[in-house]
Amino acid sequence: MLKSVTKIAALAALGVCAMAATASAGDLVIESWRNDDAAIWKDQIIPAFQKGHPGINVTFSPTAPKEYNAALNAKLEGGTAGDIITCRPFDASLELFNKGYLASVNDLPNMKNFSDVAKAAWTTDDNKTTFCVPMGAVIHGFIYNKDIFKELSLAEPKTEADFYAVLDKIKADGKYTPLVMGTKDQWEAATMGFQNIGPNYWHGEDGRKGLIDGTQKFTDAPYVDTFKALAKWGPYMGDGYKAQAYPDSQNLFGLGKGAIYAAGSWDISTFHAQNVNMGAFPPPVPAGAKDCYISDHTDIGIGMNAKGKNTADAKVFLDWIGSEEFANIFANALPGFYPLSNAKVEVKDEVAQSFVSWRGQCKSTIRDSYQILSRGTPNMENELWTVSANVINGTQTPEDAAKQIQDGLAKWYKPQQK
Image 1 (cartoon, rainbow, N blue to C red):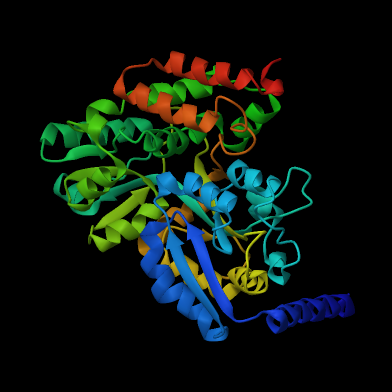
Image 2 (image 1 turned 30 degrees about the vertical axis):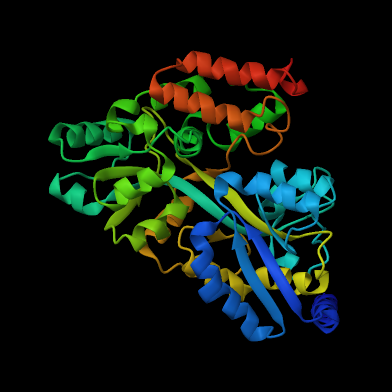
């Protein structure tokens, strides 16, 4: 056994050496939607890589999140995309692989550092080919302003009844927006609303997998009840929330004008930069619930342009992304993004540590619209954006929202046509 392990390690090392030996000096451009992280890539991650690989120049070239998919597709089709592609999870990247735009990363030695679960978001349906190196997960929950909570003598809510009692008290005080989120951009309503609180209703993976195998439907009680819970949010979101875009919400909370922010853990760095004294709590559980569930979403991977001009250097860079060195830099340079490798990592940021500690208290799941269920027309993810915003705005009932999603899914997805 020891001989086998040694042999495998030696082959892996030879693989890295071979790649390093054949890598020619060149320029790598990273395509990404994470424009919020540009300074971290420039000042911390890229210098750390180049310290050990001085012959490879790397440039981080982000596009606005909302424009990334379209811009990346146009670049790939036109042959102008960079060698390194930041990968959305599941179907968006699978489509790029199927079109021949992303290369397999199966042969990278450090892929041994990732579990099958970590690789699932970037692996073909037959489990034979992984086409992006898993980079990070994000966790949903709520961030709150500790100073406001102290001023109003509030405690972190554990249950939904606690949650609304806290919101009522903040609203009655009148100085702060109780719950910060807008519906103008729509995606927050689905991502930080529906997918945030929903797992507590559909019991995480039980519900998500039930929708995929057709044993559950969106018109079932757990999904309608999620929309009913979401429908209660509007009166707490302040005047003008319907015209409020994502950056407006970040500014509102960052300036200390809001008490609770419906969050993804990726927002932590933004609010640190604004010196918000903050804490975090997981989605409060509905009445009678015995277990809690969190959205612990495989969010970001990184792959190689199959038609890139510098594939040897790209492989060296991607293999380094799978290393323990990268995992530790990533976890602490980008608090709120959690490495997916099995590397030993100590998260030093207190708020980021709070989010990840929920993994020990609650069961993890991922967003239910990301694997398989958004492959057809209408696209379920986009439909969820619309109906979640409509429900919060009071322009669509929870029952109608659930029916619209179910009807759309049943138009093309056979397991939901039974």
